[in-house]
Length: 579
Image 1: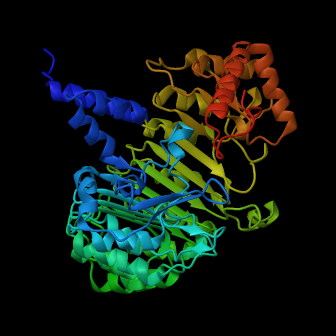
Image 2: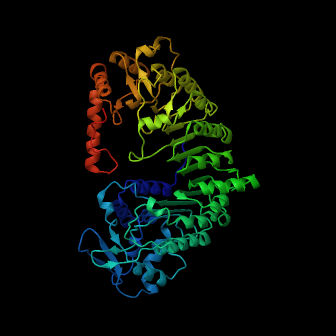
Image 3: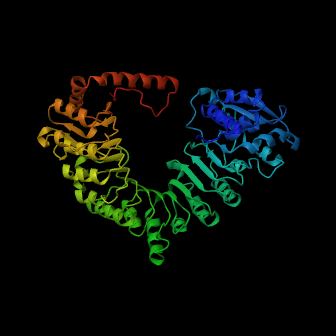
C-alpha cells in the first residue's frame, strides 16, 4: 500500500516543483488565481530570497524610488521620505515567511532571474529601514543567511558619485533568533572599498548573542583579505563556548590564532573544522596538548580540512592530535615535504585515524601554481619517493571511497601493489595517485595493464581512476582469459589517459579496454602533452572504437547547447580536448 498524501501535501509538492524549476512567474500566477493554492504558493515564493530587494519593494509606492543608472545595468532603489510604522504593513506580512536569504547563486538557469543582481540599496536607506522597523527583527523565521561582501543590498555607484561606505553593519538586519547557518562571503573583495574590521566583528558578535540555534558558520575570503579578518577568528573560535549547537566552523584559508585553535580543541559538538594552520599555532597547540590530553583529542570531529604553507607545522600538529571519529580528511600544503616527511605523514595517518571510519582522504603537498613550481631536476633532488610501504599503511582503511594523493614526488608502484590496493578497497569510487608538477616517464612507471585489470575486477563502484601505467605487452600481457568472474563491471565511462603510456600495439590497448571497461565512452586528453601518445590514442579510437565517433559528436552537441543556453566561465570553451 502507498502512503496516504493529503491535499495540502499535493499542493506543496506542485508549488515546490515549480519553484525548483525557477519558474517564479507561474508560482505567482498560482497564488493570484486559486484560493486553494494561495497560502502554499505564497509561502514557497517567499521562502528563499536572493537578497532583500523584494522586501524593500513592499514599501508604499511613495516611500521609495527607482533610479536608473547613467551606466547600465546598475540601478539604485532608495527611500524618498521618512518611514513610519504604517509603511511596514506588507513587509510584516511577508517577511516572516522568509527562511533563506542568498544561497542560490549557483542554481540560476535563466537570465531573467538576474534582474536584481545589479540592483543596489544605499546603506542609508537600509539604516532608515532598521530604525523605523516596528518589530524586534525583520526576519523572525530565517535559518540561512549568505552575506556577500559585494552585497546586492549595498550601493557603490562610483559612476554617479554616490559612493556609500561598505560595511557589515547592514547584515545585522537579517539576523533572527532561528538562524542556523551563516555564510560570510568576501571572495568578491574590491580593493577600492573600505572594509571595516570592527563592523565585521560586530556582526559576528550579534550572531553569537542573538542566534542560539546557530550550527554552522562559513567564512569565505580571498587571499588579500585573510590578513584583515585574522583577528576576527579569535572571537569566532570562542563561539564554541557560547553556542551549544555549533557543529561546523569553516574558516577556509583564514589562519586560526594560537589560542583560537585551543578554544576548539576538546569540543564535544564540533563535527566539521576547516582552517589554515600556521607554525606558531601548531607549536602553541603542542604545548597545550602536552598539558591536557583532552585538548588534543577532537573526539567527535567528522570532517577536517587543513590548509598550511608549512608542511613541518602540519606534521607537528598531527603528531599530537587524535581524530577517532574522522571520516573525511583533507590536507593541503603549499610546501613540499622530503622523503622522511612523507613517511612520517603516512605513519601519522595510520596511527591518528580510525580505519573503520575514514571514507575520504585527500593529501596534496607541493606548489599550486606554475610560477612557483620547480624544475624536474630540483624535484628529484629532494629524493621524495612514494614507496609501496607508504601505501601499505592505508590497506587497513577498507571503507575508503575516495583517495587523492598528489605531490612533488616520484613513485615506486608495481602491479602487485596495485592488486593489493584493489582488493583492500572494494568500496573505492575515486582513486587518484598523481604528480603535481611533472608527468611520470616510461622509465619511472612499472605498472602495466594488470593494474587496471585489478581495479576493474575488484572495485565495481569505481567511477574515476588516475594511476600511471604502461599499456604494453612487454610489461606483462593482460591475462583476460583467466581473470575471475566480474558480477559487476566498473562504472568508468571516461578515462583520463594523461598517465597511461601506450608502448605497444594499439590493437592490444583497444581489445583490453573493450573487455574490462565496457562502459567506457570517452577519453580525456585535456592533460596529455605528449603528441605521440595523443596520436596513438587517436588510432585506438579510429581503428578499434568506431562507436566513439558518435559519442564524440553527441558530447560536442550537448556542450554547444549548454554554452548557448547558459555560458559559464568555468566551462571549457572548446570540446577538442574530449573525444
